[in-house]
Amino acid sequence: MGAPEHVHSHDHTHAEHAFQGRCFCGAVHFEVTGEPVAMGYCHCDSCRSWSAAPVNGFTLWKPESVKVTQGADRILTYSKNPTSHRKSCKTCGGHLYTDHPLWGVVDVYAASIPAYPYKAALHVNYQETKLRMKDGLPKFRDMPKDMGGSGEMLPE
Ligand SMILES: [Zn+2]
Ligand SMILES: [Zn+2]
View 1 (cartoon, protein in one colour):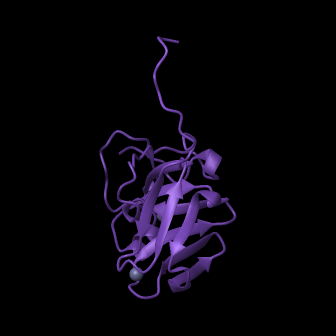
View 2 (cartoon, helix red, strand yellow):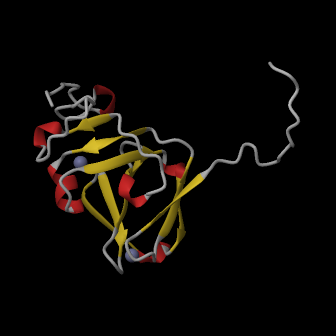
């Protein structure tokens, strides 16, 4: 320890910073707090079809880290299969996040929380890619082993 510091004692030193998310029109607001479990890019056909984008930036959070703060009654939930409950706004169709109850995480689209310092660590479902990304990050054929996949890697 260095010299004593003259710091003020604040009650909120343990308060976690919240990052705000919202749908396209702003009817639905939510926030994330704490640290995500994982961040990366998903190249799967489902993400591409639903998001209408060539690749999806995901941030995975524990469910208790994600809280709807406005417009909960405006949220539409769509489940094509039991693993993914996709949430969007009934008014604008803008995407919010996806609950993965079987995996115990919530996928918040990086684009939905623009102020969050998103930093991808890996690419998943790269066998389905339509947009190769030569960024030097690991490219998983499907998913890493600890996320229930084969763990197999593919070249960029
Ligand atoms: Zn909206
Ligand atoms: Zn995907």
